[in-house]
Image (cartoon, rainbow, N blue to C red; front, side, top):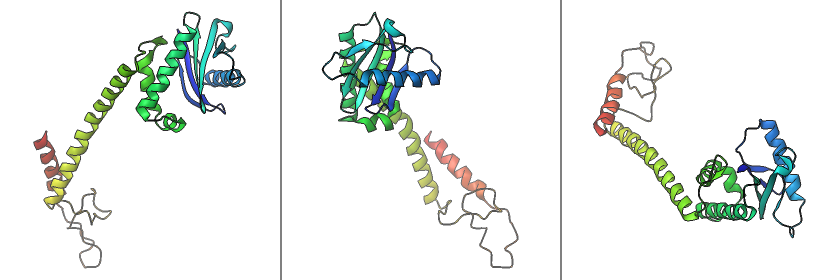
Length: 222
């Protein structure tokens, strides 16, 4: 079983951390620092697995890692996991990231952390390996991206179409806004700027008609 997955750079700055066993935040940070010190001091010519630190479970657990450019990918696992199998899993994870981000770099992990977590969730769930086929993982990620776009763009299109319909109907004047005495923010031609004798008279305005027009267009589209 996988106990934790950690990614940090050559300076020990964490870029992703996923624990499959509950630790409080302070202990998690200590585990990351301890793991970095254990892994970073190892020579490039030695094998890519070693005993885990005291905080993560000591000799009952193993740290299996790969070093790519500026990033360390570290999996903390128990004795039931194969070292070579986890090394292959790390390679699949990195190649999948490279496919999804097109030449992945450290900045991609910083600015797209949600997507990285989603890719990882397609591979590992609850500490158990779910999928090792890179093509299948990418297919599921692409499906998720399409679902997100299908949820966002219809709303955006509806909002744009409704606004343009109202604007073209002359109900909204984007160049002018009601004064502070008006309760709504839609433009009102009845509230003229100060400068005449009737500037303090607040007459009833017809904003409700503009709002009903907006809702009627939205209802018609739905």
